[in-house]
Length: 66
Image (cartoon, rainbow, N blue to C red):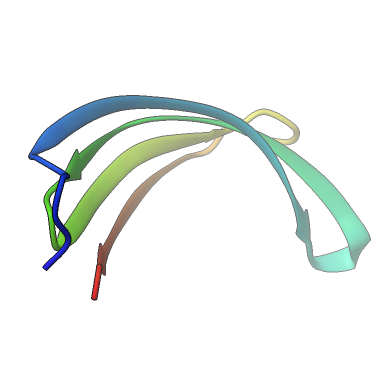
């Protein structure tokens, strides 16, 4: 167990870019929440594609500290 880390909740905002098929770059903005516990993290957000069609995508992930 990781010591010194309590339960915390963060609001996350990110401006990112990523490669897509056909060697194109997509710019996107993400708004979400991150819940941090001593042994795990759960996070989720809404991603908006800024480059092409303004699609919205929901993102969810989790990870464990060991």
